[in-house]
Image 1 (cartoon, helix red, strand yellow):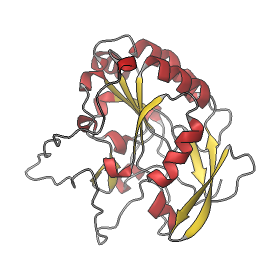
Image 2 (image 1 turned 120 degrees about the horizontal axis):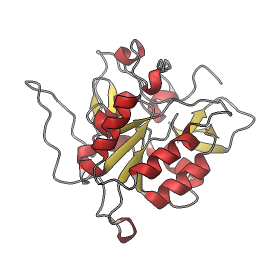
Image 3 (image 1 turned 45 degrees about the vertical axis):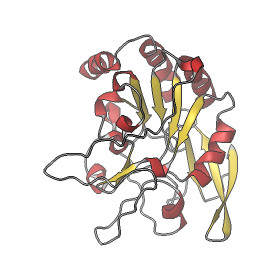
Length: 257
């Protein structure tokens, strides 16, 4: 794959420390000041750069080591009848379910035209192995929410093609993230769900830095077609779908690993 491939966020500190789950060293995520930065998630910002203001999420400002309370308006609507009693699972997109690039890829599953600054660019998208089986089953077990730090103009059409079963009950994009220390963070407290019954599946620990105890880590995926990560995770999610409090199971899992 090309060196400017589109990948999820990683901070400068993360690039120097083994924050990935399962003992994996994090993949360094390239910095690009062109169209990658305007479209896809999560490139680091120099201190001299202006900090972007999110449309729906206030800029997180730490004062005296505290974090502002979540706004009264939640990101998700009321739970639908079909999902009553189900755990909510927040699922990342890039390097978790798919890998995307502006460089042409012969075996791309999707090619998404995206307009940036008046020019249409083709985005080549590869699906992670077993993603179809994974999404179909997850949609049966949980209230699934797509939450990505990428822009909707790219992520929404990818989700349209990827999710053939309607597994995603809602989709959240960059404007729903909180910008914190150079990363777009997914603040689970803003979802409007009981955190004891919320999970997040994401390849970047920086994305769930506010709620690490709710995370099911997943290795970053780029183009290894022999990857079985999503398939291997299904039995664990089957077990999680039956619990009342996700913290107890995830704590036990971290202790055993």
